[in-house]
Image (cartoon, rainbow over all chains, first blue to last red; front, side):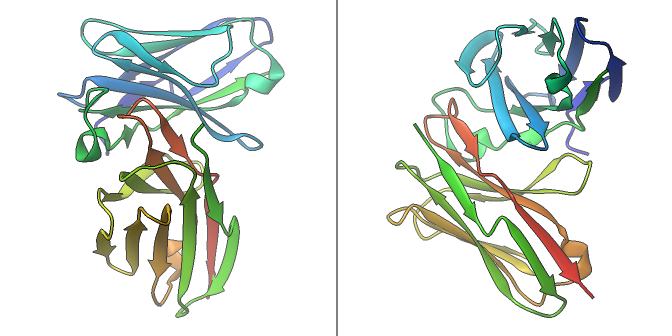
Length: 118
Length: 111
């Protein structure tokens, strides 16, 4: 158990809908990362938040958005869902700041949310 | 743009054999991480390599880092079935803002 929690574990929804995925980082971790893992795309970095501020964006679609709240939990919002959005969505946390490195940036992954869009 | 490659992408090996997984990356970095993922599960941190020449070992797995060659290796000694999983390397290229994963190596250890 990494100490990172994600809810829900499974989500089944229809095309065109909107869903929210939630992540609580390990106690003391200020950074939260979101990843999408699908069979054909591998593990794709979506976005990184540090202490409430967006610090880096990866291959995140405009239909997707995220935020990190003052209590450091994070939510990933996916809207206008398409069949191709079906994937495992992971959240990871680390203690590090954007200018730290090394051990401080070791990421610990949550169990993931499996999203199925029908 | 930081790119991370792994080879092989698929590896089937017999129990008791040794093998090495390679991770190459495209830009200067001295921070590299190895993760393991079991099917349908999350990623588990295995090793953190923070300097040129760093070597870490845990059980039958040993990881090393050569920053000059931009290469890390994950060596498997006397493989056992329990090591069957997908192994990812990840490179921290820009102060944690640019954490790029390799495509993963799917390892199957056959009895």
